[in-house]
Image (cartoon, rainbow, N blue to C red; front, top):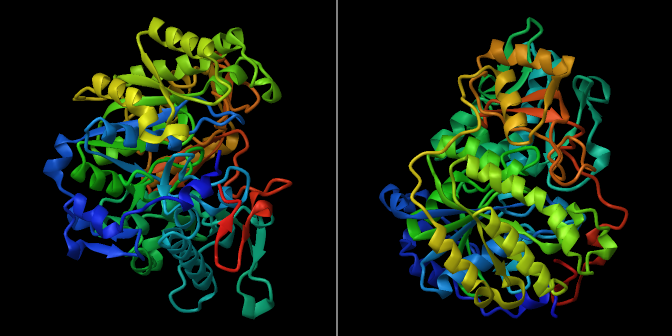
Length: 555
């Protein structure tokens, strides 16, 4: 079979102006970036149309090294829905260059379920990540400048600065650095560090904003440090938010592209789900719902991270309600959760599949707990046997959930028509959601409820640093914010090696970060990195570009 980039290079794309016309986008509201991608003005959002659109949330079981393929399924389902006569549009996240050149690869789908132009989307695209990075680093520069300034000095205590610089690349050497070297000309010597751009609070804010005015206000609410007298310092105190918003004036507009089958997709924003909310922007989702009868969006990693945050955070702020949740599973991942080694996943093993089903079942239970219907999409791999697929369908049927094969990787929309039919059949009008916790509850209670209800922890322990952080959160009046738990994506516990669906374990909250601008607080369980490192053999090593600009090795 051809590689992803070879398939994408053979795509017969339509001009983005033609894709926009199919959505009745006013020409004055379209800003083309070349022939095949464009930004769309927020004027195209229509609240009345949104009420009539059905939102489909794609999530997955706990991820494994075998891969699950949420984006591939999302794109395949989009094409499948259009194949059966539904007006469906996608609303997805933008890829980060860190994973693209690291170990995970791109995030534009795979096989015959891709968004194009694939190289552009996976690389610099329309410059959104660059703008977010610049806005982030402008605030850093203004913090250090104020610390050194003689006039207008806010009295920032350099030891209390929590704001870090950002770069969209995996570079472990930048996790912890020292800035201000060089004596008087270098500024005030202090410890600092870099986050990957997808982990910047500016990224989270962009994806939580409803318009430019809201973006500006949220940027102003970023908590950066304390003064020597202990008072909090926010970005608005530095008068940084106006300039930051200027840098983001184009980035706030969603990007319009297309699938290999010329169906429209809005791609916008890309926060990670293990350390942020893990979903595309509210603006892009609303834009898609303004234009389509069905909108497919996704949430990062497993349902316990991305989907939970989509429902408990994004839904609370946006008012959007999914009509159905699609949970992606693979035979390979279930066998891995059932104890099979990575090298042996190609062999049929129904017993391991049944054993690993406990992980998928836990996610299904959680989605049902929110009061939402669910369908399982079995992302098909060539080594999957009919016996394994039929057993998985039966396991799902036994708990009252439809499961259907998604063969979009090999066959595009034609391979997902049956899944699309199941999705339409199970879609419901949702009037209310059973949120995991009440916002008015104390911070510690909200975290404990989340850990016990979603993860099935038996005990939640708060380290002394976390206890002090809660005191600070209460003092700042941020205790009513929702919870954005940061933890490993590979396990329901805070230990990535514990697979399946264990319960009754102890989970420890090390510390709690404040994302006041984004509108949530971030308890951290286990070791979490906001700046990943490259693997021993980065994906970048296998990439090349010829004299004509043709790229190979990008996937």
